[in-house]
Amino acid sequence: MSSPSKTSGAFHEAKGNVKESIGNTFGSANMQQKGAAEHHAGEAEKNAARAQGYAEGAGDRVTGKKDQVVGAVTGDRSQEAAGNLRQEKGDKKQDVNRKLF
Image (cartoon, rainbow, N blue to C red; front, side):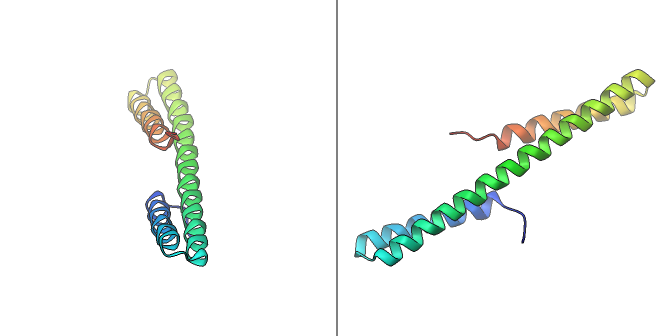
């Protein structure tokens, strides 16, 4: 199984909405149910991708902080700077993947 994708999840969520609307418009309970199921599956995939991205961001933050501290203690400014960058990358990744509503 491939890893979850926000893009694929959003596509299936929208596609499910269209199917659900068509089913409602034409009185097709089967089409409405299939659309609702695809919508929910897409939403679940999108949320799983967000959770995965948030967790990856947390990992980057921890690793970055460790490198920043080790660099500061040992006087390795290059490692310290790289740690700061990785920590910032983790912060941004978590911000992007935070649930908005």
